[in-house]
Length: 407
Ligand code: HEM
Image (cartoon, rainbow, N blue to C red):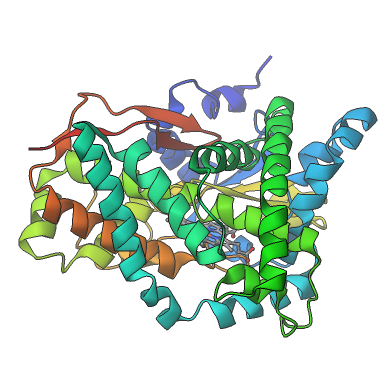
């Protein structure tokens, strides 16, 4: 039996993903720190609470492994490889390891180095557009955005992208862990991790003998902040990049395009203004329909929040998508306005010590994608009357396909 408050805030309603905002507005107003039994988590919906708690040292970022630890012993054993790879990601399980990892990344990921990727991104995108257009049909999600975002991460890391279908499939399996992690998702995720692990082993070995100017070589270098990563750890970091750098970016590119299709006045402003608003438009896309609708944290101790009793071991869902529409911060928050003066306050990359390390690259991909697309195909328009959304639990959604027409 669901309690009254569960029914009032039904976060598992089958069509919620199509528009969770009326519900999230109510929660933000009436129950900004709400314990959802459906999600077995606290759900935070106010901008100020979410920004404060993303910086709160009483919360740990390593939450996903909780779902493995809660399983019966034999299942836990079966999923041990998954847990190990996941703990290695960015040294997240240890504050010092994580800050050394960040230092190393910041040294490698300078703004100039990111900008240098522009010609490669343009080439990748144009090649994908050319081959889809030769076939005469164009699905912007599967023909362009997904392989483009994956190819860019591979270029950055130094991973060959010959087996694109395998990389996409496994990376998507692993993203399942970032949902709420049902047991079958955990097994698929582990299967994905293990297949990528086998693929990456020889790639790392090759980089050990022939260092290159890429992320794998930076992770292997002896000056790597004294980290001395083993091959296993470097493989785990690569898997992390193949997941966090790809799935998010591909979905943002599609979500943003869909929003422009749905708001022709905004598209016109973008094009007539010769893309002057593009970087602000990117922030507004992230605000209104960012690909990461929520992130989770694990309480390391008991504490009070807005009169609620958070206990050690509790999960907190930071509903970024709700915070991004908090009327205390964003006027007329449900309106998509590419000229919105404070769109850059959006939280789609989060803030605090674990915020996205790749946002300048994601922004560059967005610049290249929309400019190239509307310059090459000025009459591009959606082919299907209803967008092909699918749910990404608990509060997100993504486009399975985005078929377009063009002349
Ligand atoms: C629109 C595209 C993107 C979005 C929306 C996005 C969003 C995010 C979010 C929400 C997090 C987690 C933050 C947290 O838990 O507080 C994250 C982490 C991360 N992202 Fe991104 N990301 C994007 C693109 C990229 C790209 C292109 C890369 C690099 C190739 C990247 C690299 C990372 C890394 C390394 C982390 C982990 C940071 C850490 O553990 O300190 N991201 N991203």
